[in-house]
View 1 (cartoon, rainbow, N blue to C red):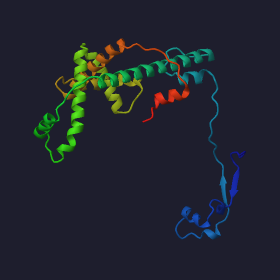
View 2 (view 1 turned 120 degrees about the vertical axis):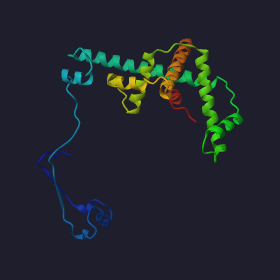
View 3 (view 1 turned 180 degrees about the vertical axis):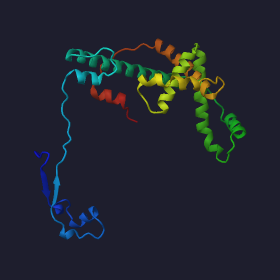
View 4 (view 1 turned 90 degrees about the vertical axis):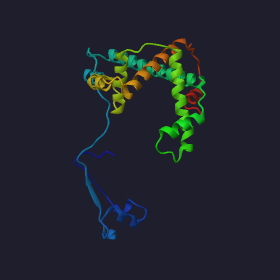
Length: 243
């Protein structure tokens, strides 16, 4: 502490470890650690964090995509508040959507015969050695697909090519690990190629996902949301429920 660039720090290597024999792991195999001398380290660079200046350069480094430059602190504070509020609203909408999906799937009943699935599997799956172990997860998977199909049929809608294209862009973005939607315009052409073959499984999957999203949107419109004041402990239990 207090050292600056150009200073040298000298210390006894033997004080690095409680056991002197541990020093041997820092050097070559045959080094005689008993005769080691003091080590001198020269400081050539110091890295550290410091508070940024609240100026125009800082404001616009945070909001680089703004068409209008931010020139004063009050405007910056307002934009930060707006952005945090938007993120919070997005998070709330996504949580509501997730809750609705879980609820409707849980409360939609579809009976799938295990015997039927086993016969189908024996006919269509090449490796049938462990087929009995595969039946239960396969039944769950088919049941979920059929539940989603029932939800789609119960809440009919129209899906546009624009909506499917948007789904394709999001899928591509997720595949390459990009979360920032501002890069979507760079993926549009590739996404158009993805959905060009209207008979492909990929296209059908995106269409199905779009129909399901529309059905969920209709369900969300029917949901009545009320506010409830909770304590910190109650909030933690909601966010991270105990199993």
